[in-house]
Length: 356
Image 1: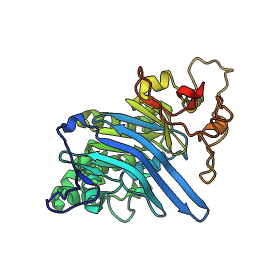
Image 2: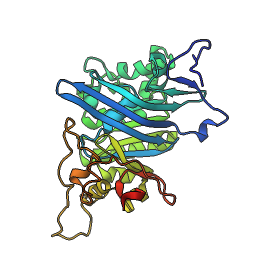
Image 3: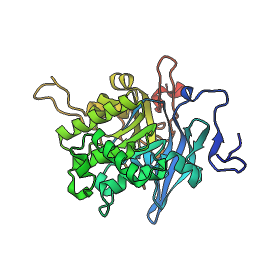
């Protein structure tokens, strides 16, 4: 299918005709295939995202879990083309299915990216105070997205901004809209970030560690807010977290990332009740459990995530794996294995036919 300009007549990189006889509802909202994002620095090459494959359906909540440094946030920023130099997407596809076209964000030009960013896919950043301008009021920053994407005038943008603040539970939004980010608490700022992300009615919300640095009570409020908004609007949510309890509370499906790759994915119940990859088992084994007894000890994941400049050969998890097979795991890179009686996939040599 040839790239087409939405106005007709011109070619536009990353934009292809959609459909092919398949309705929008039958196609996934987002398909990430073989995504590679790299950072070339003076110290060497960092393969932050190293061949990620995942899909998100309409109205679905996908939790992306893993330790810090496994590439979750860089993968999410790659989807929206928010990678700062020296980082760049070096391979793969990020297909966003719209009503009349498929936009490949990995190769799309500026106009095509702007049709997706904010309108189709929005993001709640990990540190809201760092993602917002300290020089502009909340109303200015909320209204900018409404004016840019919806073509509203200043009066309409302000009215919409007040409604958004009220929707996410900000008290006295008519007054708060003229305040600055530094006048808000952490929980309030996170709510404002969610309001900004929702300003143009996106079909997918990427929430990058939305409860980081918040107290337990505020965390519960933010999660309740995200859940209610998802149910009310029917939008899909990609929830990036290292808190397995948050994933269990929110998600329909889970993708486990390690060192830039998805090592296991599947429905929440399947992954959490019967994990297959040794890394997933180790993560779940490190979570405290009720009724385990006062003398029970936690079993943390052995070792640490390797340096980005010194990636292990073969399976990236093999130096920390209790099921390590010498001569195989340290040589062979596992490929995703799908079992006929179970949804999802696992990338581990234990499940490949010739591993026996």
